Length: 105
Length: 317
Image (cartoon, rainbow over all chains, first blue to last red; front, side, top):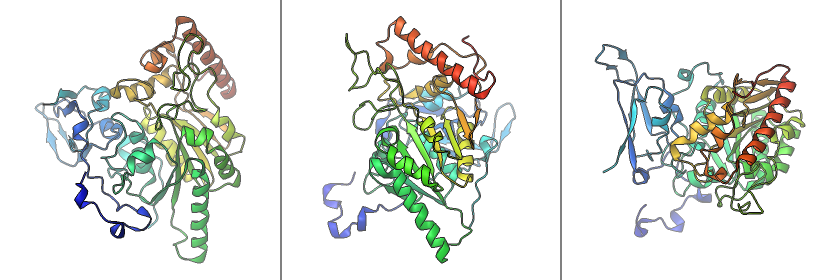
């Protein structure tokens, strides 16, 4: 959170307390004990972690990736550690166990 | 711009873009985030969300931040459905006056918790269903008032511990059955009623899409495993939701114009013990009490099989 000095005064607040859209800039990294790490070699791009994540912390991109066995995928998954709370749903639900929970620090 | 809702056939039919973004203050492992993300992925940007008080509301709209990329309004516990009706009526009038393109499809979604729907908001919900507004009402059911500190609600299941149904020698948790909200909605002759579960993602998303396509009121009742109130490890949220279906504690069904269909048939169901043993709110149960719960589920399964007309949920494995 911002410090007390930088909070807006009453005349700066929008009418009705309407928040500006599209901003949730608070990091949730401090909530974590363990962080998920994706193994791109094992991942089969089933999209389940992306859809199950309650915090929208798994980012899907069009980045191409070729595994060591020569298989090329057109999508890649990365974890946005700014929003990840480390709940572990992605690691638990991954059908090939490509996501592992690694202790923080 | 007209956006037509299409029923997703595979998980790849869902858009990449999120209209419910991360950084909200829901507990780690809270499946409400999963439900709402998928709901807005299906509904798209032309959506107005009316949110009753509850966990979802207080944790996603801490001033001056918001997690919603669509127009969103917060109202009290009791009038989510009433406000959604008003929004729908206002849009109808604006379309008639030509202020909004009459062909533009605008989805109106009301979201309420189980407290705001089963207990406090039941009257407004009944009014909305009866007047026939074109609104989708989504109940995310975590089976107690989790936001205020785990007090029992009409949705609390039999024998579950809450702070107002404590466990001792005389009281053994909740002693009443869960309220049948689907039966109440069914009595209103609503075109589309369904129950869904975030563990069965595609099934849930199909139901959201079907309900948004239908012109008229619809109600979707979604099970939401609550890591804080049900007392389990945050990573097990989806697993417990899946077990609820596999043990027939929860049945994924839909009533399309009154026609009942079970969308996830279970050929061999598991013993209810599998579901109960993962949750701290059931940790006080004795073997007799578990058998009592199993007996009640057996009766419910029989009823559903009779209503469908064939065996959709099989015997105990």
